[in-house]
Image (cartoon, rainbow, N blue to C red; front, side, top):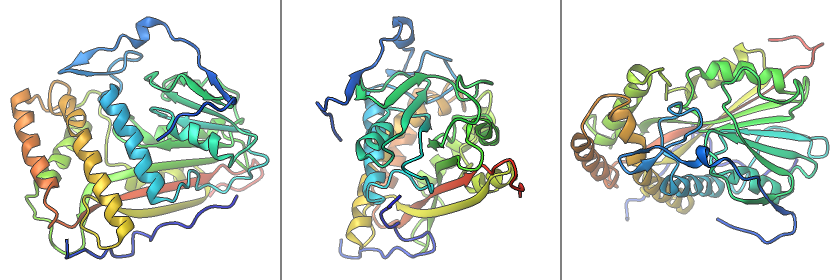
Length: 343
């Protein structure tokens, strides 16, 4: 499958600049099925709505603001990766089943169908929130499902690609998901592809202060998710994915790491634009990320305390003199055939 070139690796420095989505009427589109009203009568917390199905399993909102942010985040990554939707080495002619875990608004599934990269594939997205569009291509399906369930409701050994993006902070055990995926992948040809952000900000040139408020906020968020949330759902998992996948018996495991700047400080025009958009993405998501984990489900702060903290974080994100970035990890591995030796 022909793929566009990758952006510079995480080993490449980013030079600082010292100067300072779509609908279709295509006949391939079809209506999805209507869900019971009880599943779309979402609970509300501080003006934000959250999923009803398996209520409380996911601490972040699902309202229109968050849906718009998710689509914007998808567009940022599409621009960064030149519209590359799949990294795994799949045969486009023989790939028949694709599963997207935590599909969110379903945009990845829809764009994968529109791209015709996998012309014979049925593409299914699962999520706790039924927030996907009503009109989708005929080979795209969305299901209300919890990936932590013992049984995923599909035949064992039937899936060519399991794709998972931004599930950190959603799972009690990411390792369990990696192991469970083995049951449903096709032996010998099935791939698991994971995309996660290491949300701890990094800096190469010493411009990020030790007391930078965004870094302090991120550390508190991670602490709330891993120590105070019940049950804990760790955020810092990206650095461990390759090892977990290897330990689970996958082969041909490959990891790519990329730097995503946190503002428009880079000199390179493409990286500058990515940084500008990434900055807006974090600003738009800040309240949704904070309310439950800093409030009732986590650290127990009052809303006034949280709002005051967010003022400082917004000011920190506006500091273009801080040349901070995050590592974006893409990790993939193949399930070996039964006669292959596990490593």
